[in-house]
Image (cartoon, rainbow, N blue to C red):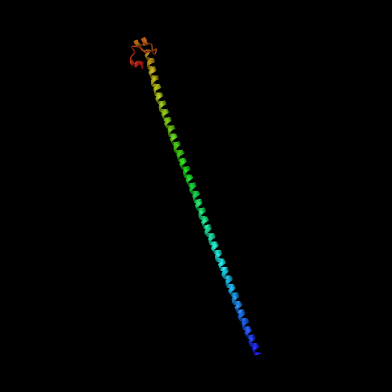
Length: 156
């Protein structure tokens, strides 16, 4: 009976050892599962980091695109300003030309008015000569024909 008890004790110890081994095996499986979980999380983190990096690159590309478009807009604004300045300059030149022509016409009108005035005065003097007792008056009669004896002053 003692052997039987010893056998049972040995069996119990073996079962206990087996249970411990199973427990250790289960803990190893838990550890292995945890390691796999950690590895999966690391892969997920790497994927997220790559996604973030990719998003940052995309954002940088978009920013560069926006900057390029802003540069184009700025260049167009400068071109518009340059064209506006060119138009203003042309308008000023045109205005100055118009003013110069106006001044020229005023001067021409003034000169013509002065000439008409002088000619009118001369005509009045010539008309007045009709009434002076002078031998040329009788001879020429102011027919506006050139008289042979008429002095140069009267011809004018």
